[in-house]
Image 1 (cartoon, rainbow, N blue to C red):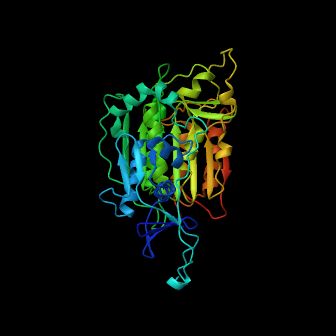
Image 2: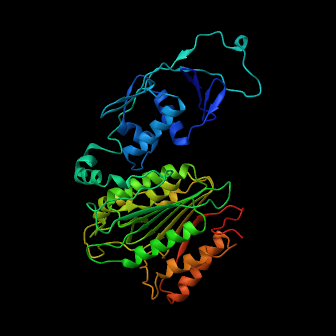
Length: 422
């Protein structure tokens, strides 16, 4: 337990208390406060905090700012005396911290006579290891300088998942870029479901309007069945999509369901799947490492949801640049596959619209075969989630004459889950 300024931070129960009263604090904000308290009187850079709180996930500074605001609110630190801001650098937790070996007990109060007689242990700042460049390395920042500068102009895309959305004016970013969000009534008083829907159709070599239509239809269907927050992104730039995944990770912390649906160009190399952002055309396996986003990033973004993490990958699963004679770079062969990201807590499903090595077939109707089958399943009351995706598979196989076979991976609990309850 860490004690400071009248507060106690119970590390075993992940609870913040003030004078024996629990102070509400979101999980990610608790992690931020813990890291600050373990490094008192030290300058913690924003990059270090981002890496500590979201290891391996690209998020924006705004995500960190939200956590710091939540910490200050919980500590009643309105004048920023406890958590001090160092302009353009980071934060300092400017308070002495004492580590106590006692555990809080709500049943048996601890009196003064029961307190240990030894002096309290003052927390010494934990040395920070520098075993190499952090996730946001200097080389990466240099290589992506233009992209970050561009992202500044589309900063309106960095929204918060729990406030009423504002209109996003992104004419400078892309004329085809649209971001919308709508709020709906929760499916039940105790269950909160959130979704991120992405439709990428604008590519240099080919336009895929069907992907945008599929994404818009899926987003609308999710709203109608009671998802609390649905974010629809159509043709977002690479950096905006990365930022959206970071923001969605925050929303998933307070959600029972976290669903991500992607329609657009996809690729698969060495067992690792990638979604291709709008405007990107990776001509070889080399280009995937810089131009595409790994499926594992989507799984990490949804990982904090309590009951279900569902990733729907409605895209091709073929290698780009099949005629490229150069060998596939080792960084891609070593890239962790989605199976390494399956969480043991709750249910995690990855639904592919195609089998490995297959192209997604264009539909003859308004939507693609997979999206059309998924929409029908989502609209069926009382259809259990596993049965829904099995039905989607059979329907797609039938309408494509066996040319496209969806696959489902992951696990489901014994308790039934429904898109639309009975």
